[in-house]
Structure formats: structure tokens, C-alpha cells
Image (cartoon, rainbow, N blue to C red; front, side, top):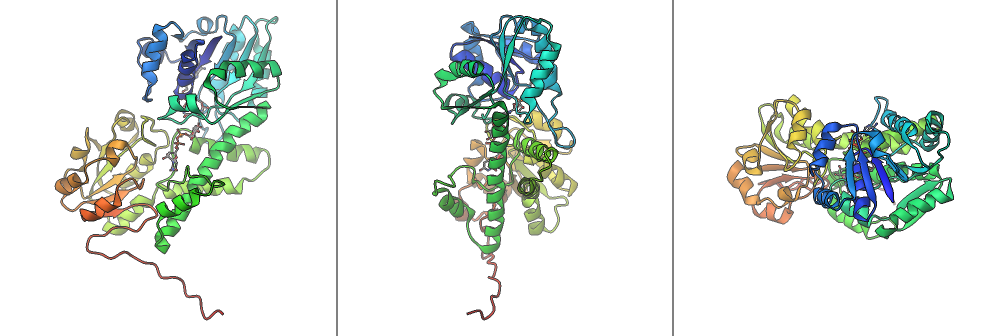
Amino acid sequence: MRISVIGTGYVGLVTGVCLAEIGHIVTCIDIDALKINLLRSGKSPIYEPGLEELIVKNMAEGRLHFTNQYNEGLIRAEVIYIAVGTPSNEDGTADLSALEDAAIAIADQISNDVVIVTKSTVPIGTGDRLKAIIEYNKSNDSVSFEMVSNPEFLREGSAINDTFYGDRIIIGSDSVKAAEMIEEINKPFQIPIYKTSIRSAEMIKYASNAFLATKISFINEISNLCEKLDADITEVAQGMGMDKRIGAHFLNAGIGYGGSCFPKDTNALMQIAGNANHDFELLRSVIEVNKKQQNILTEKAKRRFGSLEGLKIAVLGLAFKPNTDDMREAASLTVVTDLIKSGAVVSAYDPIAIDNARKLLPEEVEFLSNIEDAIQDADCVFILTEWPEIVNFDLELYVSKMGKPVIFDGRNCLDMTKIQELKIEYHSVGRSSIYLNHSYPVSPLPFQGNKK
Ligand SMILES: NC(=O)c1ccc[n+]([C@@H]2O[C@H](COP(=O)([O-])OP(=O)(O)OC[C@H]3O[C@@H](n4cnc5c(N)ncnc54)[C@H](O)[C@@H]3O)[C@@H](O)[C@H]2O)c1
Ligand SMILES: O=c1ccn([C@@H]2O[C@H](COP(=O)(O)OP(=O)(O)O[C@H]3O[C@H](CO)[C@@H](O)[C@H](O)[C@H]3O)[C@@H](O)[C@H]2O)c(=O)[nH]1
């Protein structure tokens, strides 16, 4: 099948490359000429494991092309995927301007019948809106088109794997023929396909992200309670997750969710609900809990040291999660900015995201190119991203580089037994702190009175 993909960000590029890998002829279009030039030279503009190798391979085999010209990119396309960004407006609603630009460009260029697929995450009803825009602006009256919603569920850092081994593919369309065509395209992935209406497909995407965000905020609240009641969140999450109705995934407590999707999509769904005169109270709490959760490490450090003024703090991990260079809504943006405001002297390290982080973090931050240099003579360490390199870092080096290390682990990713052996002071999330020369703080149970 001849396929065009509009937008070569995380979703568009991965979609285009994977569709080429299963045999389709794909042209990726982006208005960013620099990105297109980079891609034409076989380089990926984003860090995503395995992606660059597949770009090079599929270009060499003649199935993958890149252009910044719509007229060139849409020629003879049988299917057009739209995968441009839908970032947040200031009020939290989704900014659909890139999507509408793409729709107008499609309307201007299509010269044969085509199926138009929305991959971007869009408010419910957007498919209908795009259809009207394209119909109205179509330059060739004899051409007909059908709309499909095919939301994307990949995670950054494992995007290729998720595309090949995802749990489901949602195909929303009011046209049986168009839905069957998209089903046919996706067949080689051998992933269960579920067909719905366009509006249901659009809602499935928001509902899935909101549900996952809810799971994270819920476990984070339980972890805050665990700290007060001397229970261990790792054991609690494990025990909960053994119930198949709950499921073991997305129960990792920490400093909250970040990234380009959960914060943006939960806010957008709040607005979508509001516009439908529905007050989504549960989701509002999920968002609030997440905001509070990003501060817990800094608060712990303030309680521990009294003041952070002049304290040398090494921050390890800046990306919103491991295996990505994406800094969008990363917890590090809040945490590091707060540390600097509180007078701390911050050194920072991330294996991949430093270039992106430098543009977003306060200029006072010193960026180092390895963990050893970042922690040298630091008073304490903040772990914000559980990169394998940070998880597997030799704990004895904290002792030799810092003397009396104090570690605040926002991802519960270090080995507690080894930490205890090395007598490192360690504060994590939802678990008792390990204090050198201190006993564990145990909160007393509230007085129950003389109830029978
Ligand atoms: N990043 C993810 O993990 C992820 C996962 C699932 C769904 N989504 C959704 O997919 C969509 C895309 O997300 P992303 O992270 O890939 O975005 P991104 O910002 O990484 O990439 C968007 C790309 O679109 C290009 N673009 C903008 N306007 C254009 C136009 N008019 N014509 C052609 N190209 C244009 C930009 O130059 C950019 O390269 C969003 O709606 C997002 O919510 C993202
Ligand atoms: O148990 C968990 C799981 C995740 N997170 C955090 O949640 C955020 C998002 O993580 P993840 O979902 O792995 O990454 P994304 O790449 O943002 O992927 C989410 O957002 C995408 C964009 O919509 C969807 O396609 C994916 O299905 C959805 O998982 C990160 O900050 C994680 O640290 C936790 O704190 N605890």
C-alpha cells in the first residue's frame, strides 16, 4: 500500500518506519526542513532505541522516503496518516492548529480517492471536524475520502517494540470499507484489532491515558500513607498487583508522572468534560495529586537538612522516564527549579537528555558528563529517572565520592539491602528511610478510645 504520514515526531516517525518495515511504501512529510534533511541523511532527530537502524534499513530498501513538500509527499497516496502534535493551549485544551493546517494541505493536494487516518490524540468530535474542513477546502471535487481514527498507544523509549507487540489496535470509522483497509494494513503486526465508531476511538485514547494516570496517582497516595504508617509500598504494590483485576503494571510509586502525554491528555480530558457540562472530579484529583507528588523529594530534603541554602545537590536523571531524550513535563523541571530557588548548588547528569535539558533548566545548573563527576563532593543525591546506568551504578562510589552520602530516590530504584550494608542514608518513596545511626520513625496508631 502507498502510505503518507504527516508529522515526523515520536508517533509519525515510528509509525512511518514500522509501516515501511512490514512492507508498505511510505513517505513521511514534515514542515520542519531541518528534521527532513537529518532524516534523509539516515539520522533520527529523536532518541528512540532501534529507530535509526530501521530508518536506514528501510530507506536503503526503497520503502521509506522523507519530504517537506506536501505536493511531493501526497502523490498517489492511498492512505494518509496525520500524526502532528496536539499540545496544550494555556487553558489545558488541545491545540488543534497543526492538525487543521495538515487537513487544509491534504484538501489542497489530494488527487485520488483516499483514506485519512488520525493518529494524533484529539478531542472527541475532531474526526467530524476534520472531515468538514477537508470537504470544504477540497480543490478537486471528483475526489472522495473517508475518515478513520486510529489512536496511538506507544510509549516513548519502547516505541518500536510497542508498535510490533502492542496490546490492541483501535480502528474507529463510520465506513466499513475504510476500516477494513486500515485493518488490512495492520494485519502483519498480528495484534488484536478492535473496530469502533470514530468518537469511541477518540475517547478510548483519552480514557486509557486518564486511567493509567489515575493508577499512578492512586499508588502515590497509598505510598504517602505507607510512609506515615510504616508500611512498605513495594510490598503493598506487589500484593495488590497479584490480583488480576488490579494488574501488576503502573503501580510504581515515585515522584509522579510526566511526559508529553499524561499531563497534556488529562488536562485536555478535564476540558472536554467541562465543555460537555460534566465536572470530572476524580480526574481533577489525579492531576492535583500528581502536582503535589513532584515536590515530595524536595520537601524531604528540606526536612532533613533544615535549609537547602548552599547545599551541593547532584541530580541524576532528567528525562521524564528512561530511554528517551524527551524532557516534556519531566519532574526534573519542577524539582531542579525548586532546588535552585531554595539556594542549592545543583550538578546534573542524564545519559541522553542533557542537550534538551540545558535549554529548559535554570542556567545555574552545572551539567556533567558522567555520574562520578556529578556526585563528587555532593551533600546529597536526587534520583529522578531510573536509567539502567543509574540503577546499576556502583553504590560504593557514592561513599568514596561523597564521604557520608545522603540519597533521595524518587523512583525507588536502588537496592535497599546493599544500601543498608554500606550504611548509606537513604530516603525513597513510600518506604521507611534508612538513617545512619537512627532508628526507623514509626508513626503511632491514632488513639481509638475504649471502643468495644
Ligand atoms: N509521544 C508519544 O509518546 C505519543 C504517543 C501516543 C500518541 N501521541 C500523540 O500523537 C501526536 C503526535 O505526538 P508526537 O509526540 O509525535 O509530537 P511531536 O511534537 O514529537 O511531533 C510532531 C511533528 O509534527 C510536525 N508538524 C507540525 N505541524 C505540521 C504540519 N502542518 N505538517 C506537517 N508536519 C507538521 C512537527 O514539525 C513535528 O515534527 C500528539 O497528538 C500526541 O498526543 C504521542
Ligand atoms: O508505574 C508507573 C508507570 C509510569 N510512571 C510515570 O508515568 C510517566 C509516563 O510513563 P509511560 O506511560 O511509560 O510513558 P509515555 O511514553 O508517556 O506513554 C504514555 O503516554 C503515551 C502517549 O499518549 C501512550 O501512548 C502510552 O500508552 C502511555 O503509557 C513517566 O513519567 C513515568 O515515570 C510512574 O510514575 N509509575
